[in-house]
Image 1 (cartoon, rainbow, N blue to C red):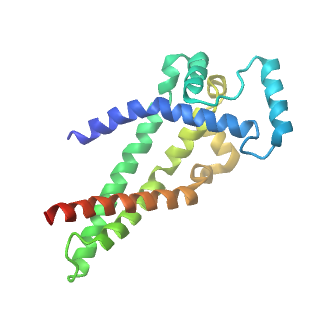
Image 2 (tube, helix red, strand yellow; image 1 turned 45 degrees about the horizontal axis):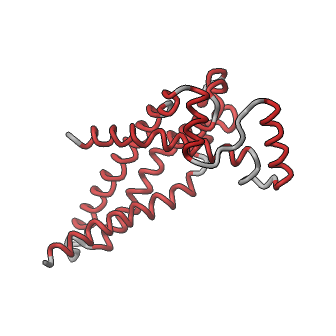
Image 3 (cartoon, rainbow, N blue to C red; image 1 turned 135 degrees about the vertical axis):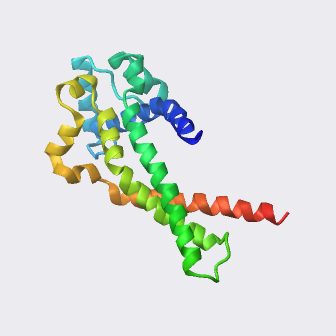
Length: 204
């Protein structure tokens, strides 16, 4: 199968950008840009960063890359690769397997439906996406939290231990409701466009 190798290559290319994105978001939240501390809180955080020698908040991808490299070396850009693979592989398998199984079940249950049917494509895609979000949520929570922590913090205490101590097992499903809706809509749209294109090409 070529597909697993393709996914692995994609994860290798995606990992540095995912690490940089999470670093930018977590630093913005820590400084109150997204957490509601206001201008005064932001200034205090910047002063604290200067006193401790830390780099101030990164505002671009190059700055985020440089911040990670200065902290953990070039290998730090791929520090979350294992978790990213553990998130993407179950996500992809659940989405496609769930969508295909549900799609076939709909066609078998309702004889009047003629494939490809766009309504079936959307519904099975939405449900398949919801399944994929549930399956991959623990790895997504771990990845976001792990890459938001410094190398020293990760060395002192494992990220999984931090999440478990803060919220118990349910901590690995924080944000599931929001991600569930987002992934379900995106997945439904993907399968709608795929089958719509198949129908359009078949008409030619």
